[in-house]
Image (tube, rainbow, N blue to C red; front, side, top):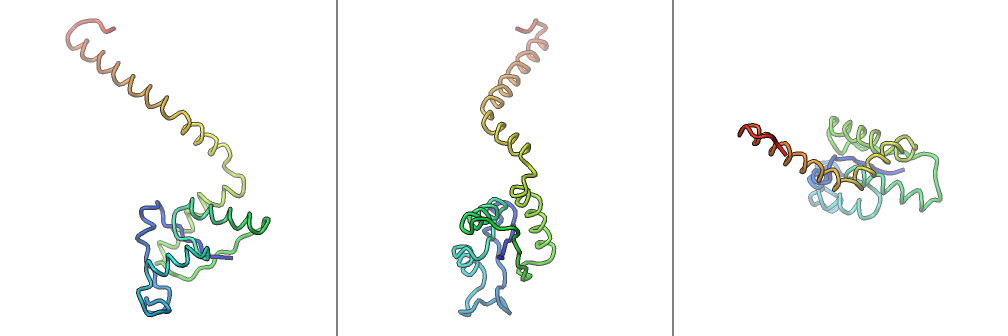
Length: 145
């Protein structure tokens, strides 16, 4: 059981602030934003970040415990309702399928594409150069190479 809060891309996660106690103050009376969130993240008690952060935490828990059958997510209304729904959507869409074996084909495709990225980028650049040369030759009335 624990807290998962998907905030979208990592750049957005850093700006998450949430009242963790009534009135927005933490137990020490300070601002409940980044300091308290950082403490919860560092302790491993909560994940506030992108889907990769949530998956990494579940993998750590799985390894630490030797495996478990389910994960119960605590909800404390730290974010407004639309953000909470978005968090649940990110978890359902990008985190849970990793543990349910639902996306091996998609992951294999992403890995293959990443491995071959430079080849694709070079082919695209070359195609752009050839198309430009062909266009310029046609405008000049000369046959292209």
